[in-house]
Image 1 (cartoon, rainbow, N blue to C red):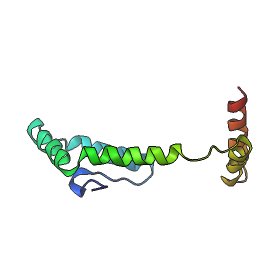
Image 2: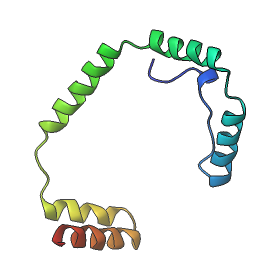
Image 3: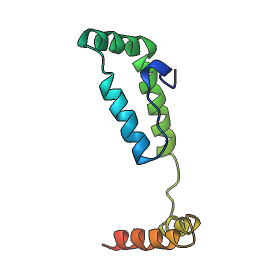
Length: 99
């Protein structure tokens, strides 16, 4: 599976308060150590870690074959972020490259 089943996840809205609340709920419902062992066994049985490693390696090889993007092109991509934040990101990236 690409995603854990519902009983193994806690979702939260992308807001600080919601994330804190989800973490509080998750910590409050931590299982006893015996149940934690069963949880880990269930995850172990769901995945073939050999397959996970092969898929990750395939992705890394594909990325390694990509042609490098020139500095000018990389910097100009920041302008697509937004009218103000794009220019700010471009400036920060340019300064980071120079320093």
